[in-house]
Length: 167
Image (cartoon, rainbow, N blue to C red):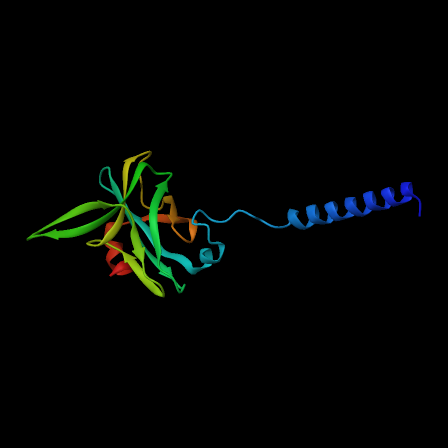
């Protein structure tokens, strides 16, 4: 083999290797969820998400977060198309009075369900972007520490129907 033939052969082999690596990489989604753990994404499920029709601004949102994983996760923030500001809240007792407190995160224990319901954890939708009417829908985008971003569509329902779903 001459030097020229060897260089051509090596160039062809190198080209084939680069092409193969490029093709292999095209089918893979290398983006991990916000929490960086792609396996955790399938361990969190949101069920029974609802927004009771508010008489005025603000509105609240309730749901059940199911964690089927072996590790706890934390709900870090929520965004919504229905409000300029969305906050995580918890209802707490202060002596004989109940009050709502804004919190930074909500822990979802491993292999458990966390009910977000009146009198407990819930979301507040503040400065609504449009009126919320029964039969409408609200998109909630939840960001978890491990599972990353999960979006859910919550129907707007009567306030009286909340007790049957979340208690």
